[in-house]
Structures are given as structure tokens and as C-alpha cells.
Length: 82
Image (cartoon, rainbow, N blue to C red):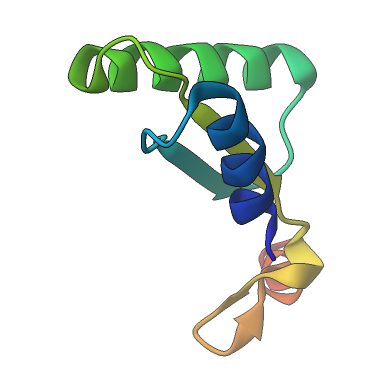
């Protein structure tokens, strides 16, 4: 069971069998205050559409050595630019 399924199972147990929206954001590392802002804005936006139900936001931070673009790690691409 992945993280999203685990959160879904936990919250479904709390709110019943209603479906629960999950928003996943993958990107570079950001500081805690920016994460708070991101989670708040995404939740507020989704709540406008879904109504008053729990909305889960997962922030997955990916280090440059774990992301490849066009067959090359971001870490290596950045080194070339420097």
C-alpha cells in the first residue's frame, strides 16, 4: 500500500466511505513556510470545487540527483550550466 492509499484508508475510516480528494505535488525542496502556503492555497482551491470534505495534500520533494530530464540527471545538467 502506497502513502496515498494509507492516508486514504485512514481518513476514510474517520469520515466514512465518502471519496476523499488527494492532491500530490512533486518538485524541488522548499522551506516550511512555503509548504504551508502551498498546502493552504491548494486546499482552498480544491474546497471550492469539492465542498466541505477533507482534502489531503502530499508534498513530495525530489532532490536533483533523483530527477532526470531528457535522459540526464538534473544534478548533472546544473553542473554543466555552472
